[in-house]
Amino acid sequence: MSTENAREYVAGNERSMKIAFALTATFLVVEIIGGVLTKSLALISDAAHMLTDTTALGIALVAISIAKRPADKKRTFGYYRFEILAASFNALLLFGVAAYIIYEAYFRLKAPPQIESTGMLFVAACGLVINLISMRLLSARQGTSLNVRGAYLEVWSDLIGSIGVIAGAILIRFTEWAWIDSAIAVLIGLWVLPRTWILLKSSLNILLEGVPDDVDLDKVGASIVQVPGVLSFHDLHVWALTSGKVSLSMHVVYDPKINTSAEILPILQTVLSKEFGISHMTIQFELVPCSPSAEMNFI
Image 1 (cartoon, rainbow, N blue to C red):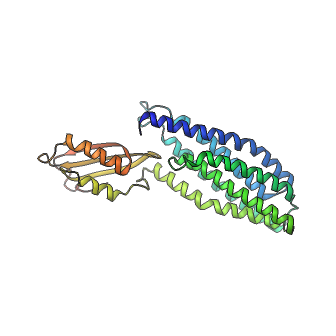
Image 2: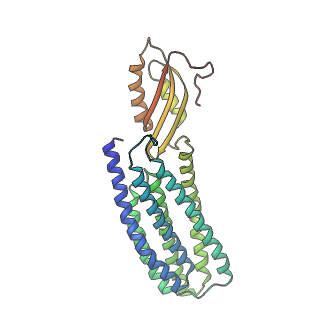
Image 3: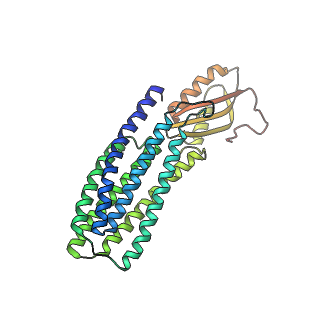
């Protein structure tokens, strides 16, 4: 990704998230008041998710702002990793909210309060509209950034919550079964947990400098040895600074009679960039392996 494209990408993410943040922050106040007045745990659960939406979007915006800072003498790779820290925090925040809602629902199932279903329905319907707009803003960009994906997941879970609350309000109005409110709150919490775990796992993999999920190390190795002049490789490392910014370092043993290192390097760069999306690489060329046991070693 070129510097100009990277700036446009970050700016696009920032614009979308600012609008989504303004919408969710505004409606958060309405939903909290509505949840208290109607005594609906499902609505309060939805408001809690809306709070995490607002927090997540705020953190994501801060992360984008920090990530735009240029590299310096202390941060030679720049501040891209801050976006992953934000995504990890958002995942942990979702875990906490889901646990609280399930805990609160347990006690409410024993003694369900009287629910004002009409007010509950109206507030949930407004929340659904807000979530649909926010999802529309974030959906196009959530596939390329864990930071945006974390915010998108927050909004997506809240959208499902709004649908659940609407369904619950309708059922309570016609059946007067108040326990439905708590049951829906629990279902919302359980629905969010596995998706939150996926986000957290992806974030931790980047923080631990693991191989990105969409990079097959065996295929990378197979492509490397197919380049004319390459005899073997070792000390291969592949990791990501942040979403979509994959880096590689390795030692390559080559035969100068077939190709020189100057001829092999641009071929490797093209192959690794086009086939695996690796944007930054450091390659050390050797006529013989730097240690007897190094040949074809992936670590």
